Image (cartoon, rainbow, N blue to C red; front, side):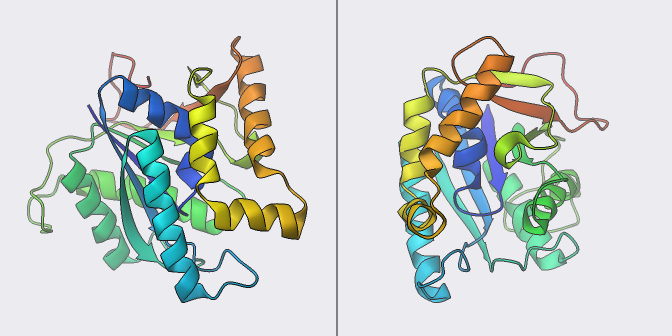
Length: 234
């Protein structure tokens, strides 16, 4: 299968579903990681243009760690809007380019608007990618890919209906998160947060819920015609 993660910022997929993406890749699936926002506002000291370049490279390095291909839409932070047809069509093109069989994205209720709008963009674009007269560079698809919402930050207000055991992938996931040094170092020095421990703790909690050491939680986007009879998560 072709697996497409659509996250908002360059580190969001690594944080919330990096273990599952690594597991997909190890199983032989083709994995793509698309971030819509470029993360250019995610620092107190580093200026936006420089930070954009840094975070794009960090995302590419993290994707390599997980066995995935990185794709950037390059929208500025705090500028992600599902109503923006230009951005929607760029997301649509990524879905067509990757020939996505499964999409993982943000829950449409989260702690910040950028995340919520990214999830809405993924759901909308994955439907209209099937319209043959809405032209982009890649050919339209005839598939309505199932969409899974990944966990919110710290799991707040998110009750998973499916879990993926990432016990064997947890260190690989943390290595990918650690590729985002501009964020990991900043949070440790500026906010006093050990973010690698934060992520490990969240996955250990989901593992406790699902009877394994470490897990990631998901909920499926419940809309026709997205359901399949086979299990699609790894």
